[in-house]
Image (cartoon, rainbow, N blue to C red; front, top):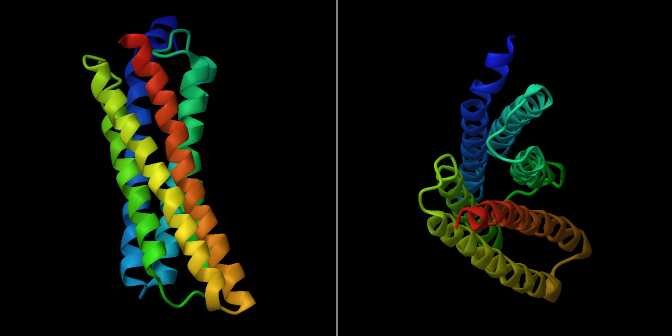
Length: 209
């Protein structure tokens, strides 16, 4: 690879890969919403989400490899690395939550699983919109608005978790409590990871404001 090829394609390649990773996270979030809404195909959905998670890992690995050889990057290398890692983390927690449903033998969804999954989906959609606008930062305020919305959704997820745990501890057996509490926690952490991505994107937008 010549020096010209190392310098100039990197800008396009990084944005392409980051956008692809964000859209892959959205695929995982969409599948999670479908699963919690129907809950009739847990095994199939878990395999699908695992495949999506592997797809995300591959994209992230490609970005890290590009960082190792790139001479010029469109954003600071550390920022690209943090953004990649934070996006990948969302998928990890979506996948982890689904696998816990499998391991614990969960046979039905509930209103809280559905609500948390929907919050994750809405948050990721906002992140995709924000990521699509950092390639050519013509409207940093639009990106910032998307990030503020993700922060708002994360606060809602905190409230949902509090209500879920309050109800859970009212009258369920200990085993059920342990199972559902763990899944609720992981889904809420996924919203925290969405907020992490939003904070990174917000920093990028602020520099261009």
